Length: 291
Image (cartoon, rainbow, N blue to C red; front, top):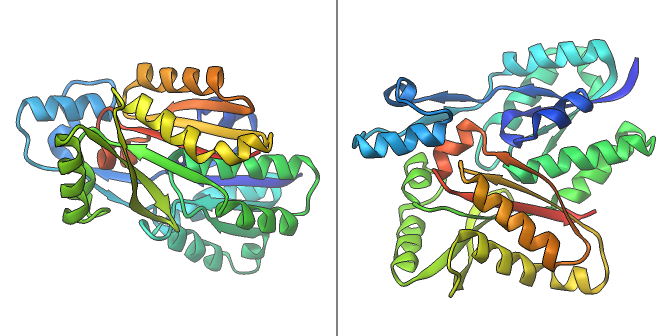
């Protein structure tokens, strides 16, 4: 039996090849939006664009996995691994962490083999924690040492994002009407607002004037926020997720790796459907941490 296995929820947006390589189990997060299910499109973002064209007035809803969803995945992983580390979406925006804890308790003594970490992040920020867990387990750290390392890593993981239209995230209730209106006002002034995750919550963290598009604005924001680390020659691991804007995500990756020494973008991936209905088409998310 292998020593330590990983469980994440789908909101981590890990690429399939990483999930397969490291035998990571994923717990589904649920989406309910009947009005778009039959619309044409290869992914939720394309369906959202079609819904806008057809002037669909409804918005999608999400719900966290149930304790049973986690329970089923935990049982399967416990057959293959001695101990399990489960990394979840931020508990400040989702009940996913709570569902995982309930499932652990249901297992009784077997639950003592499961260790749950609140990422206080989402999408590629949560994914970076999973990659850090892999690093630590490959160094033959104990599960307790790995969890302690991950908990310290949470505060050192940063995430910034830009959305094309704040209406989607406003409708979800994850940001206030006041914050959504601020984003709209800034956009009308030709200024690109930067959103980020702070202590598990989505916050406005700054603005970027003069950037011609979202990838450029995120690049210059990232450049400024990592200047000190790069001047100290620290190695930085980054990841990018996108709302069906692969071209923009690839351009952001190219700018980072061509112009900023010591930064590796480890993957680009589509934002999961459930988080996708919150950020909307053409959103870009960039997360990083010192490697």
